[in-house]
Length: 386
Ligand SMILES: Nc1ncnc2c1ncn2[C@@H]1O[C@H](COP(=O)(O)OP(=O)(O)OP(=O)(O)O)[C@@H](O)[C@H]1O
Ligand SMILES: [Mg+2]
Image (tube, rainbow, N blue to C red; front, side, top):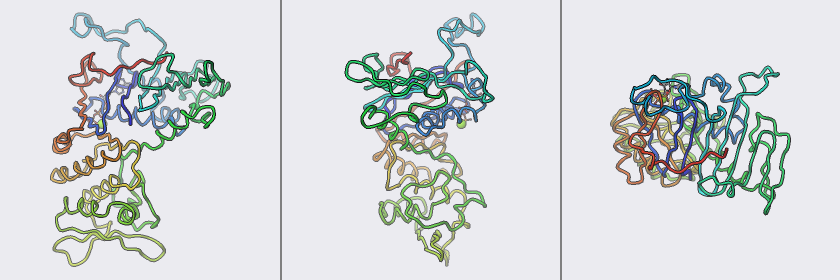
């Protein structure tokens, strides 16, 4: 489980350290930084898949993702006594991302390329990566240290060099990780690879989910939801079929679901509703109904991830469906850590009924994302390794 997330110098986030629980609800007004925080989490996930440099280039390059304000907003700037202006920079300009987990913690620092002999001028460079034990970084707790091209791991009282020529576009997760020399790299990589993001289910008329799809066992719903029928049937066979029926009855009283195998090994959804003489197919369902079924399939997965992230799951759902969705989210948070970004008042209030809900309300002051009500002392302890 993630205990703390730390982000610095990324878009509207100058510095942010967030305490996390089992069920995390991120909310706040338009432009407060919810999506930026979500993207920062996605970037961290990309490090373990070998895609962080590429993802930043797709965002327009590191320079455009750096926080566009001054490094420090002083008290006098805050009070309006002096205008907002650049302050003398304390260190080199870095985008920093990190998290503290149960056993190990990780951080990465990315910077602009020093010499641009290469055509890949949008690609940032990975400058530093560290893995340490426990939640707070101390030099003594450092286990794996990547400094530029050099990766070394602690070995007894000294250090063993694992790689000397790591390309600046590769993360340590791409280069090292073996049971013998760096088991913590292996463990963290697997942990991060088991994060699951759902932020863009397709439900338009041409969406693959509206057509019959290949029926193969699917314990994990595809991120765009294309294999919904197979995922629902997998829940019926090896998951929790009662919870599935309850979730459907909860939202659509009297409704029932069937998955019909077609010729050629394809599966089709049959949705029986009160008053209709025949079931409806996925092509005939409304956007909201289809999206609710997609969320049900994602949340009742028979193979829970280590972290499930839902970005604005309320999209196209009627407010009356939101309490049922909240019940599903709370149920999922018993199996895995959950992160929900939402605007919807009914979803937020239903999730807040759960005593384990960690509600983080973001606000933007002078362009900078902060947490409503967080004072210096409430912030979890976090030290960047350099
Ligand atoms: N490089 C940057 N430096 C500073 N601020 C930035 C930078 N890039 C984007 N922003 C600002 O970050 C703010 C927060 O954006 P974000 O998309 O995270 O908001 P949001 O909370 O998701 O809002 P919404 O509810 O509208 O989706 C925006 O106002 C945007 O102008
Ligand atoms: Mg947003």
